[in-house]
Image (cartoon, rainbow, N blue to C red; front, side, top):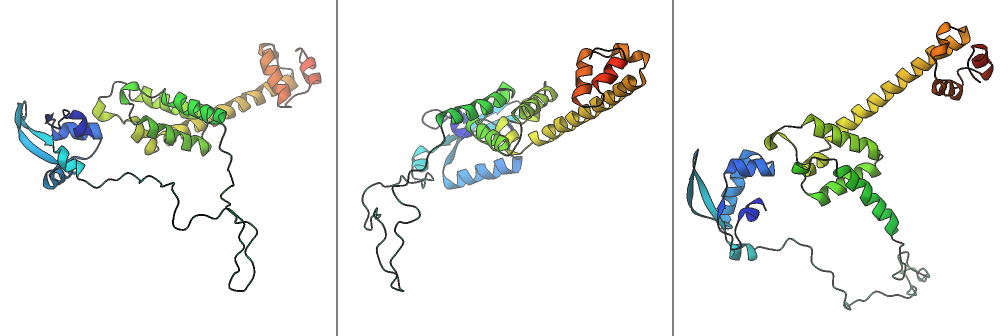
Length: 261
């Protein structure tokens, strides 16, 4: 597909080094060379000349469109909707079995059974979540939007929070800012390979550490209140509410420490 993108409408004029192909497709050098050899052997690619470059010369290729058209199709065949030799029976089963017992009154998957599809509102909401996350990815590295959205939806359905995945994408964008294109990962590979998991784990770990620090701080404040420590005057109203919500102190202790109830 990369070679086709570089070709003219008639398939000619493909002029790009194997290193360039490797960089843009994120394939290994050996894979690129082997694939080019296979294409040449099958007649899909044809060498038409060479062009000079700073490292010597680059081979110019042409895609043989007639050879491509002759290839076997890989797309799924369309489902025929006409009548078949053995059409589906829409009525209840009435035939006798080997034991002579009539069949069930209606097959389990009756042709008239209509499964309720998901609502349009739900589909739109899910798409908006995935698109919001993908929008955080560096725009110069976006590739395969449909693949990315599908992988993002899988991650969210598996229990990953929208905000956590968004923060993971932003963290990678910040970490890789200034990298050359050969050193970064395109979005479809980034989500497909699950590289976001490490960032999400770090985010969860940081959240737990923050909670632990907050709990430790509240415990210290509770000790100040119960001891009526002079530093109680530095406790803020929001901290008082947090102490009461955590049931670390009572309203009476707050009042006794000279704080509002």
